[in-house]
Image (cartoon, rainbow, N blue to C red; front, side, top):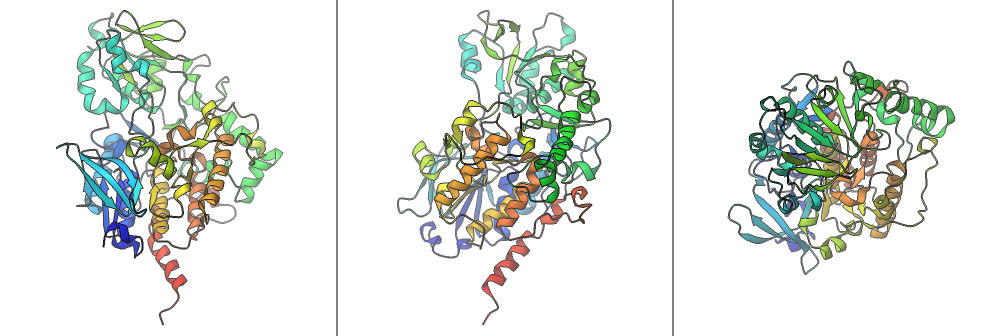
Length: 579
């Protein structure tokens, strides 16, 4: 039986391709195999599994901004951090991914292949893919019945043209120019190109452009290696920190999520916090008093980092209105903020790098200044990893591309905790995502042959993508689910979610990189996971507890290790007893 006829038969009997071998790709392939899909194949352009955590992409000094366990998948225990504390290093994550793949996906992964030109078969059933071998550079066309795209949003670099390697060459800039994604394989070259700072006071620094987590980790690593470093950015990531780790009943429970509004308020406590005057006061105290009073000495997080009131390091995004938030835990003496406070890292913010200087030895800033530079690291983010997979016509037909947002949305949430929002980003105002639940293009929802995983931003990525993998498998199996009945219904739900995200996170243009921000669960990731469980007709709020203790119960991936068995039982009940 070919992929063209598979859709008319048991969907588990024929081919399914998972594109991408990061955490979402690995758990999706594993879940499909456990559900009985026999023709599962995982393709990755990398030489090793792990995605952004593969051995080709990590570099020394890279730490997760999540506490231990938040990338854990329920089939495999996660070892404690090798560096101590509760933060995994990039090397820890790489090893965890490789162990998972060797234990559960042996023989299912093809490395060093790039998927191109996904298109629907002329018959209208199944898919054709061009697959290029990156070693032999040969290309073949393959046929699959179903596709899950798990390429994520942090694999295709976004390089501003005015800062590209070509622009550097044209300006006569002779130093290395690389994106942060290439720091791993090119780190030795970068270090070799710049002498340690102690060798000369006249050395030009390595200039890191960007203020996010990668930029901060790279700056810290280079500074700790004795290199002179400067950072240029419009603003920095927000962060949480304290003199000692937060207890698990706060950091690993639902508690923090309750202080962020969700698209719907499931519990009495949430409704109190986000719809009453007193509740808003409590929420304001939590966020403004503890987290984001950048102009006040009352911020516990800035105090934990010993950041002065007039420091440029306070030019950070709001942790309430943004998703650029790093959990630093207990500050490290050799971490980014400590090194910047000591002057070892020079931070220029707010500032934009707008090009290379005519002298061939500097970068120009938007305020008219020039900074000498011996090398440039572009921590400038990523563009959608879906763009190279198919042409514009297929992306439009499938529904992967963003669509023009409604000028006047019919949806509005009058939560007091959403008052006084920052201005909406122009691109957020103009565009909306077309991905239902961040998992299925709304246009394609009735076909049950295409899905994505890993496009939802969540601090607990392991738990979120694992539940999503079960959602996708149930969707492919045509299980009874809470789903829109038509593409039009799915599009209406997607438009409602887009309106919510514009109100909740107005500064984030989610539709411009839907492979990363197909949906923003972030602080309310437990509520988002509950929605997915509800869709499958499975119990939600699994951490337990009574009316007083449930907000403090630690969320553990062991809660979801039997989702397959629960789904099997539900399917069997639907069929009824054998006759």
